[in-house]
Image (tube, rainbow, N blue to C red; front, side, top):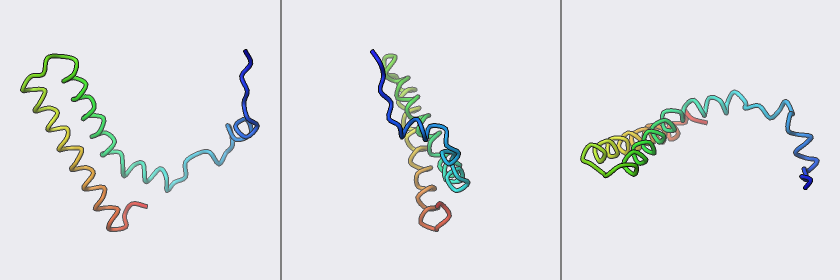
Length: 85
């Protein structure tokens, strides 16, 4: 079986312009607390699924959900003020 690759992918796979710009890196940096909070929330939900749910798991999930929502509020407020591009 031979794999078919489009010419566009082969040409642009290693293009210099494929690197993120400074503005994109800054946007990622601004969103990183939200991303990490979402990862913590998923970790808490996975931990609750792997074992019989206990009160500690429920508290961990609620805490992670509150943290994720709080970081989204901060990010949205920054975007509303024009800080995030």
